[in-house]
Structure formats: C-alpha cells, structure tokens
Length: 99
Image (cartoon, rainbow, N blue to C red):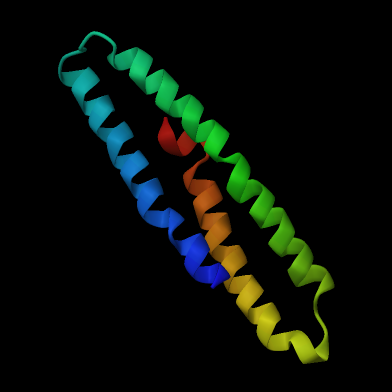
C-alpha cells in the first residue's frame, strides 16, 4: 500500500516536468506576458513540494537502517524499494532538474 501511494506521485512529477519544458519552449519561441512570472511561481511550488519526499526519504532510511531484524527481512526489502522510488522523486524535484 505504501509503495502504491508513493508511486502515485510519479505522474504528477511528469506533468510538472512537461509543463516546465513547454513553458521554456514558449518563452524561447515568444515570451508571452506573464510567462516568466508563471515559471518563477511553478519553480517555487516545486521547491515547496520537494519537502514531502525529503521527509519520506528520511523516514524510510531510518526504517531500513534500524528495522533490520530477521523476522522483518521481507519488510526491509519492501522499504528499500519504496525508498528507491522516493529518492527518484526527490531527485526529479531538484532545482537543477527543473531549470
């Protein structure tokens, strides 16, 4: 369930990335009034959004590091999978990825 919840973020991140790409193309082709302002606000929103996977990443890192017990090996593998997805999302939201 946690993995599915984390994975629901990927389509949102793809749409944000597509929007930024389209805005950059529009600005290069012909700067419309408000395009730069819209781009600035979108980048600010992405920076704010970045806080969430950052906190999730830290939580799952703790679960992986401190939750390794013989009876929890299956869960630890699952936590690592979720952690990997969160890290990908976090990296997608880095300022350089949307610049």
